[in-house]
Image (cartoon, rainbow, N blue to C red; front, side):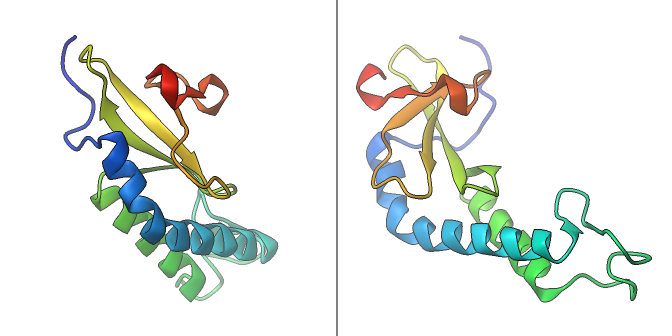
Amino acid sequence: MGENLHSVHFTVDEARGQLTEIHALASKMVELKKSLTGSGWDVRKHAYFGGMGPNGDGSFPQEMETLVAIVRQLNQRGIMVKDLDIGLLDFPHVRASGEEVYLCWRLGEDDVLFWHGTGEGFAGRRPIEEL
């Protein structure tokens, strides 16, 4: 099938085993993003709408530092943060056929129940039973 995009891959059971710990991280991530956006921060650009520089003094607020640390921690584990607003995460996985896909989970779901191809997004999610 060619070269994989990711060096870390999760089985369905491994992804499910991460949920207890990452649920708290995803909840905090969504909360921080909402708070920062409400304060005028553009998290994607690390910019503040209304001051010169990030917040007028050249530093980032603690909420931004914490958000970046959470995203970095998830990425270091091999988990991909896809949407900060809804807590959408993908776990790289290799199907029995050798195709690399993503196991997909979002905050509010009790289990890893969906997957999608690497070129598809949330809209392309299919039930895990079709994996």
